[in-house]
Image 1: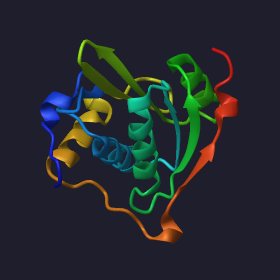
Image 2: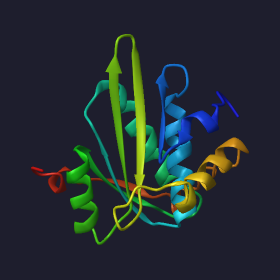
Image 3: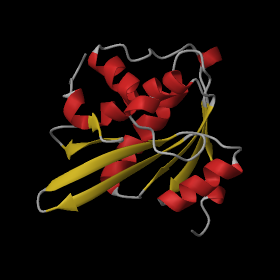
Image 4: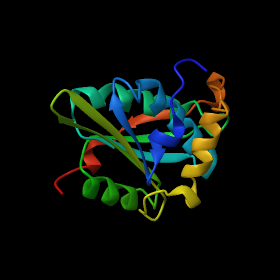
Length: 165
């Protein structure tokens, strides 16, 4: 695995989070998305981010990882910049679709990048509902490989669903 991470530090407490650069890098977003799609066996995700410049590349990689998760042909509804309330509403509007919210916070000279995963009912994914499986897959270097073009999903711009919170 290129650029391994300490999965026990980064993937815990109901989220994927770490300082950037250092504990986490953009490739982690790809790994998490691919493992999430395979773990929950979904063909659709709603994805949003906070609009922070650092989050932008993590968001792009997350979406790419999700559409390349084995044979699931996952369709990503990309909400663009949205908050948690907007994401949860869009997930419900899309027919109880799982989702992810990527954010970056800054203090002094460090940035904390966080990826929160949500199940189809809008509950944050915890260890017992899939996060432990994702952590184990990444730690064991068993991230699902990209698929061929026929099985690849697609990313659809759905900023229209974010609206006002």
